[in-house]
Length: 198
Image (tube, rainbow, N blue to C red):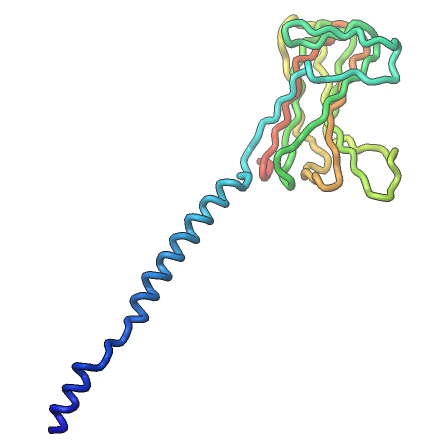
């Protein structure tokens, strides 16, 4: 009799919900959704990789002090051609990722002046809020054109970089080019940026 009553109770008792199974399926769904969200977010983040930043000489702007008030610089087929003495040209540099390293700095040029050289500098202007505005900037890299007058495109490169780590939070960057006289023409500059330099 007891056995019969126990069987009836077990038969008519409400089934226990399978909490573990339902939780497993629910948790698996949440995990897959979290994984998909993580992949999407990673796609939005900048990937640290080697970058070759290129700046055409046509973007460079002349700044004074200079010998003449007018900017007589010419551009011919993408080549910057100074037509007076001692001009200085500037362009700003925007690095894509903070914390990367500047590994190489190059000037691409056309030098048919046997006596003088072009000079290009990569410059960092640091600042401190409340500090002195006219403190001297830091020269990160300098290159000068090679001797000789060759009617061809040439490139000069340096891997000697001072303070190569990019710090966008307190620094501005630019390139300065000096041409002491004519027949020193510029095509552009290249900046090799990497997570770590080889």
